[in-house]
Length: 161
Image (cartoon, rainbow, N blue to C red; front, side, top):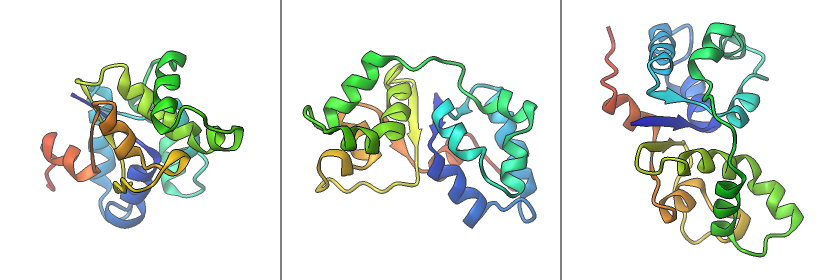
């Protein structure tokens, strides 16, 4: 199983649960998981993460971290269009822009819907419509498993030393 993290999952991890000064071994473990092909971020998420000005940004911009965590795939436009149609089939240009990065991340999961899980801090809210739909709701409609970072940590047996 590949756990594909969106931006919110890793930013919440560094801001609320696994700060670099408090739980540094978490970040070493995450690098190991990335190198082993079990946990990745797509280019679109990486581009959002690398602009961080603190310890996290410096860490994720290191060439060895980028190599470990970055998913080595090209975005499939057919998958993107299928994901966007799940939001709504008649999205406006502004709505398409609002869906952009979320739709991309879901599209990477769609490339192997049974072998990938979308990891996000977003919470399902099925009542939202069109471009305001949450990633878990769109992903589940497409047959993609979703979960929080805690799910991935449990599945991958993360342990505090």
